[in-house]
Structures are given as C-alpha cells and as structure tokens.
Length: 140
Image (cartoon, rainbow, N blue to C red; front, side):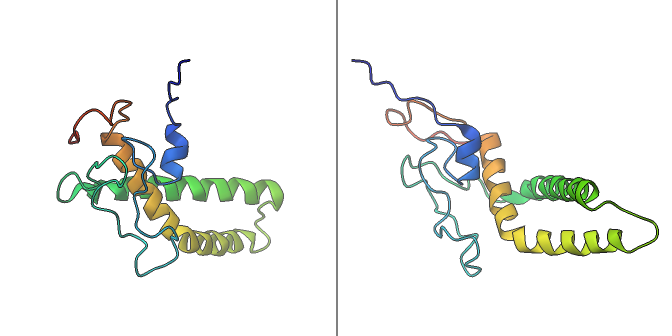
C-alpha cells in the first residue's frame, strides 16, 4: 500500500506559524502571542527539521513591508465593512468613529500581525522540501 504523505497547505502553515521547510515545527517558543515578554522569541532552529529560523543577520528587516501591507489590508477591510454595515455621512462623526475603532483594532492585533509577517517573510525565502528527512538543511 502506498502511504505517501500529502503536501501540507502553505496558507495554513503560515497562519499557524509553522516552519516553511517541513510545515510541522513551530517557529515561536511561546504559543500565546499576547505573552508580551516572549511573544517574538523564535526557536533558533525548527524543532522538527532543523531549519534555521534566522538564515542571516538582519533577515527580518523586510517584515516591515509585509506588516504594512497586512495593516493596510485590514484597514481597507474594516473600512468596507463599516461602510456596508453603518455607512458614512458628512453630517455626523461616523468616519471618526471608524478611525478610532480601526486604530484600536490595529493596536490589539499588532502581536498577531508581527508574528504573521515574520512567518510570511520566512516562507518567501525557505521553500517546502518533501524530502527534508533525507537531506541536510538548506540555507535561504
């Protein structure tokens, strides 16, 4: 009987902060993103396949661009939802209420957005390797 493993979904592995090489190991030491003393502490290597989580010094400087794109996408989504559900008017303060709610939402979701941006950035440069058990660790 053929028991070939299926390739794990990249979107799910990125959203779950899994290693992009094996898509099984956890990238972060602390599972709770709101434990603010340790929420960005990453494992040095994937606990499953041994892939380094920081391939080179300063690797994660580019995550600012990813985090910015995620924040803009979230703001556009809340703007459209607010417009459809409540609407905007020139005669009241609904736009200012949306700005306040959007700012609060971005602040509350910031730890999640920071983790997600690192996971996306790493997945751009480290690819899935179905034969990771046989080979050695590939550098980015």
